[in-house]
Image 1: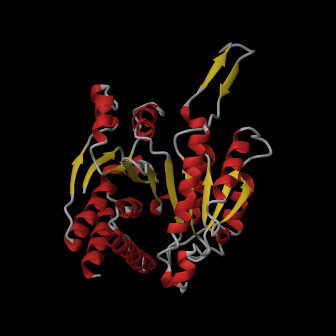
Image 2: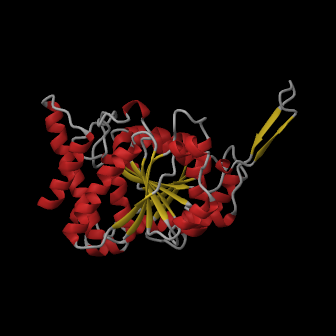
Length: 366
């Protein structure tokens, strides 16, 4: 396994250091080779050199098996510059057309939902990651006058929509094949039992784009007879994520809606500090990251929770086919979260590095 490691800005390098610590322990435990290059594509380099991410550097990223990213964004750089010219350039340039966000509440993690449990909050959002409003297509007319008009275009091709929806259906089937521990028979598992894909859109207002999404969704659904397919408006999805999250299995949606509902989902699972995500190109190089951002106020204090970054490492392992190591890491995360909860109840906190050490200890003792 050869990884490109981009710690990034703020607390990004601190949490990625703990993720690397866990990956090193797993490589020893499961006897696989693990190499990585640390790349300084961040705000500090930009401030010193005015260099962002060059086309040559982008091409070089294609030589790695995967990318592990901390966070992009610097308090001394105008918002949007680093995000557009590093983060989004990687996503678009590497055609990472799937943003995968597991919404999973672990036992003993507190959810703001009074009825939230590890059984009811356990679903996945598949967000289309390279199209829609985030491509920056738009214009101004008569700018800085009283008659100014600003236009931002939501553009989708059938190709973009279909490959995203097909990924969601495949993921729904595959995510249940390893669930014998939940008491399902092998026959049920093979049949994709309980698998469901929900299209989240706004067909009653965005009548062109989501007409395309809905038509393609139900066409693809015919190829997956064992998977239940349904449609829910985005506003209703937000209601159900709070009121009845157990109704969801896999949600597939557009770039903008996915960006919004996954942050809502992260809060219901205990906050951004425990929420990992993946930017996936199934045929190319994928990127894995914690969702919490740079957290500049905590930089250098050894206080930030690295669980989301370690969870990003778990998603990376699973994606690359290191199934046993991925399961070991997830179990280690669960065990450490339980341990942390009992200690926090006793008014004992944990530093960033202490949490990483506990995860490594759990890996070696499992």
